Amino acid sequence: MLREIEQLNQLWTDIYYHLRYTHHEKITHQSIRIMQVIEKENEVGIKVIAKAIQVSHNTASEHIKRLIEKGYVFKSRSTKDERKVILRLTDLGSDVLHRHSSLDEKKLKQLLFEKMSDEERQLIFAAFALMRGRAKTVGRN
Amino acid sequence: MLREIEQLNQLWTDIYYHLRYTHHEKITHQSIRIMQVIEKENEVGIKVIAKAIQVSHNTASEHIKRLIEKGYVFKSRSTKDERKVILRLTDLGSDVLHRHSSLDEKKLKQLLFEKMSDEERQLIFAAFALMRGRAKTVGRN
DNA sequence: TTATAAATGTCGTATAATAAGATATAATCT
DNA sequence: AGATTATATCTTATTATACGACATTTATAA
Image: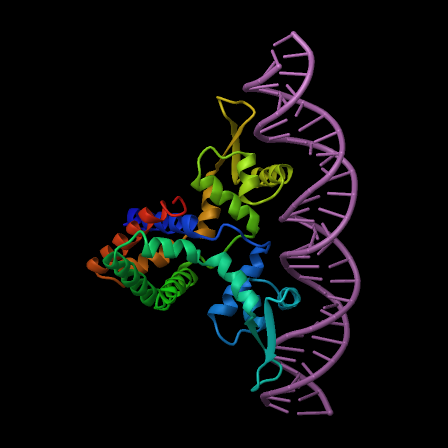
């Protein structure tokens, strides 16, 4: 069983290594993690960021300041509670995050539409959709 | 077609977001990228690293020095050409890289063996193996 | 067998990122 | 009104990142 888990991880990291974007703009690790949280969760504020990356709230606030300076993130305030900040990615921020965590669209296109049959492609989609659906429930219960 | 590609990327990043390790030791972005190259390629030296992360050879050499200090990497010399360094990950280095690029084994175990039937699990493995096989050929023609 | 090239290492220096404590401000709650 | 909550700013300290210049060692060419 452990054998299978390791094997799946091997497949996972191999796929990412071969299909990721090769050219990256300079960006730090913390920046990526912060932007991932902003993209995947909703109504993200400073506190959520601080907890997600395990730093103090003032450090989180400084990270956000820099991300705003770079044009990757923008702030708005919650209408319900005006103390709360709501963070969102700009289009530029989305692009940058994409190039650091997604698969290269050109490579994916080649893979799915030139190197695979329709049935194979459908197999891939079915498997990923299944895995995503179940992954969402992992950790709770 | 672009729609499908974007959708697959959405699935990919969602899966990673839900199944990745949540606790990370402090490590920089460049360190991870360097260790990925060392793990996935063979006979990696300073030049290869420098090219992979787009820095000068002296900067690459300094990165490697720090990774060695941290106990993540070790050096040997090529027997054919003694000028050349060959880099490898230590066990600790492998662990650290694993926690930054692989899926959490506990979560995977839960996902594959508690939340899926045998047929579903086989579907996942078949799809990933297929994808990995084809991914290796992407980029070259 | 020198001369030169290739691969790597080291030193000095500069900038940016990272992080926390202390303190401040503004909105909300009691 | 006073306390609490969420965020911001300022100061300070450490580490990471990067490069140019120069040094070293091994390999190859003339």
